[in-house]
Image (cartoon, rainbow, N blue to C red):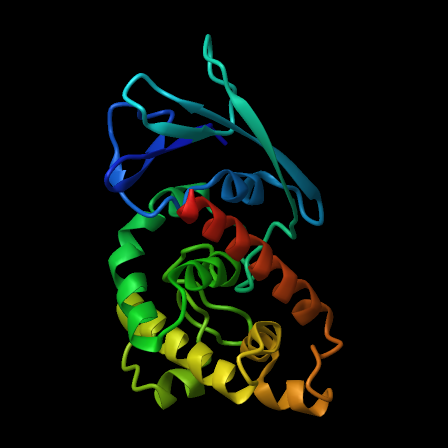
Amino acid sequence: MTGFKVCFGRVPYARAVGDPNRCHRAFPIALLALAALVAAAPGAHARGRIYTYVDAAGVPHFSDIPPNGRPYSISIVQLHLTGRTESGAAYDPALLARASRYDPLIDRAAAQAAVEPALLRAMIVVESGFNASAVSSKGAIGLMQLMPQTARRYGVTNPFDPGQNVRAGALYLRDLLHRFGNHLRLALAAYNAGGDAVERSGWRIPPFQETEAYVPKVLRIYRILSRMRAT
């Protein structure tokens, strides 16, 4: 995978190193952590360096490759990755690179459900890798991998429609947070395994390998996105 930069001005932008003359209005979703996530082999530990420098215009840059002829600082990002989304498909770098097109609908859904946009983005990364056409072997559909009954519950008529899918996923997450006393880990476990499974497990993360991997993976990406947004 090619390198990339994230540049910030009055409005956040994400820029691919391979296309240096073009900046797309976007939350910096194409973060170094996501590059590592795409590139990592199944089950690998991905350890990535973030090179940070400020250009002559005072704009900070974040890159997975060291800048030439500039002083820079280094941060380390480490993730445990499985190399596949919850839908079962491999991560597609092209889809992640275009993830910013979903920014407006993610922000709207997050505001409507009173959940954090960075959390929804992290879930989408893990659920579908921003593949709106993803369908799992269990029948989960779209960006947030809605099961058909969940989609119907939240009034979705076309679960492949990104706007409907993310809106329903955000509302479902909101309801799970309410159900489990705003305990984020339990709400994420319920999103993956079902609320009844969490309750049967004594309000603990169910002892399912998939769920035990899902919760920390979402939380790692969520923390990274939150830190980068605050930068």
